[in-house]
Length: 184
Image (cartoon, rainbow, N blue to C red; front, side, top):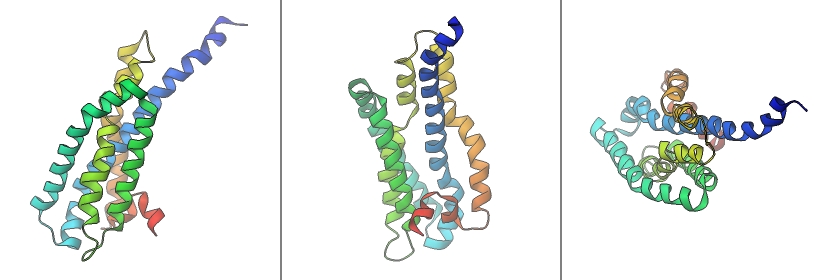
């Protein structure tokens, strides 16, 4: 057996974590950035001011900052997998709540879905969690692997935000969010 092919399966696992971390951060940060793209539509549909919508973002940041130390502790204690699965699930539920919001009786779903439920997910699917997951699996090339994995937070947005903006161009912000497929 060739030494290079024998070493290949051992290396595939850690690099898979890098790729999954990249895509998880790309998704989480793009959903976070969707607020700025949807703001004009939300102003029109819900009659909210930019200040009120910015308040939703500010609350989300506070929730994320509160979750971060607990997320770090959970990675140390239970590993990154359950935390990332739960975090991505919270983001999904939060997006579903946002897409179900309608002006009038259910408009409360938007701020609660984004600034509470999804924000817990944003705090769990964060750079420090991905960096810790990668550091736990790499002895050499740790810096390179961490750099690639955490680049999803910015490079992922660079790839996904234009698609999201294009989908929102028609003013149909719900159609741009994946949860709308579930709630239709």
